[in-house]
Length: 391
Image 1 (cartoon, rainbow, N blue to C red):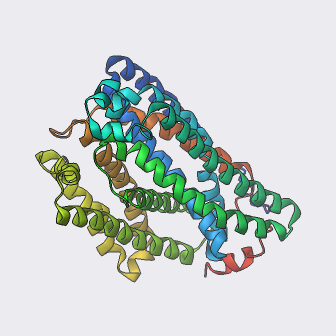
Image 2: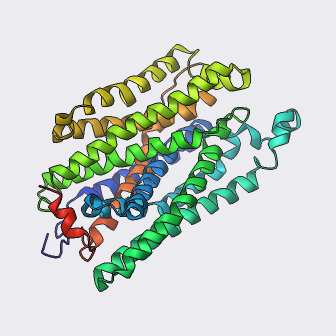
Image 3: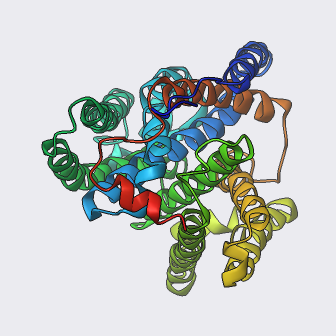
């Protein structure tokens, strides 16, 4: 890395990730021919995992600009690169179109004809509108990510303060667009798997899980850079401590939203609402997954990160971040699979290959975007204050 904070040695991470993606795609293609129904289930879990992770990066970037945060300037290029994987993820949405009939009960005309509730929702839950909405979601996300990256990189060249104003304005308006599009995407891709069930805070639950995972991802990524001796003069203990605070806060928020949704439905005791939780509890294996989520997605990180020293211990922080990245996958699996496998958990090798396929390409693209330009926004007026925060 030189004085301009350009990464001279990109290392082998990008090529390894690309190789994993290619191998995963090839194996997944075989799985699609062997058992297409199971392939689409596994694929959807992997797809929503990486999309929510990338959306968390987009939200993190906009949040920092909208609030005028100082501490995060030195780590912003990581979240910008993560958000820029969203155009690639649109490509990975396309196979989902072929799996609509395998995944969504409401897409079958005969099922709609025999069900009054589905008939009432047919104006929204229909294949054409479903695909059109997805195109709109990705268009909004891609434009936001592109504009944020455009002004951030342009400021490196010109140093004009007007770019900071533009970034703040784009983020302020973008947060509202983000909230609406992510909420409806969560309704479409996850909640409509059980078309009779609904929850008004489901979108918030999906958002919080994705944002929490994106924070965990950034922690792991910047710790890896630290291990290689990269950005050690810019990203220090205080930055990781702030990351740890966010990890702790959104661990609590995730549990709060999940608990609020559960207890309201349990208290109301309306059969069409409680069935969603019964599908995740009656079978003993799904019950174990539900308990695992409570224990490892909330209790362990909460108890660990509640301590000041833990948030400043980089080894502990790395372990908690990795744990939450794994548990985010378990959470997405828990949201998708019981709708089709009510009798219990059935793990498939395609669960692994689809994650390899999408994850490998996403990590490769992320790494290329990150290493392509300066690792820091060199002309950001808050940069020096952000570096000083490292003490």
